[in-house]
Length: 72
Image 1 (cartoon, helix red, strand yellow):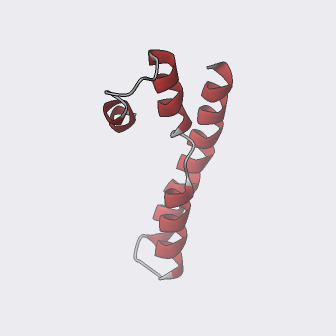
Image 2 (spheres, helix red, strand yellow):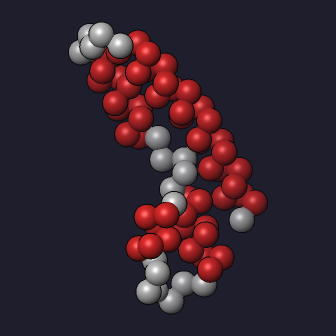
């Protein structure tokens, strides 16, 4: 969210709009899903653990981000 806010620093967006853009980046779970699945399928030593952590991060961040976007 800090990166989003810093990239929107010199724009004409209002503070609430900048906050919404930052919140909308929370539920992006594509990278976690890909990393977890690839490490597991390639048979890495801790592939099962990495997949479990990826699934857990998806389960936590997706509904949290959606709820925060609904509130904002």
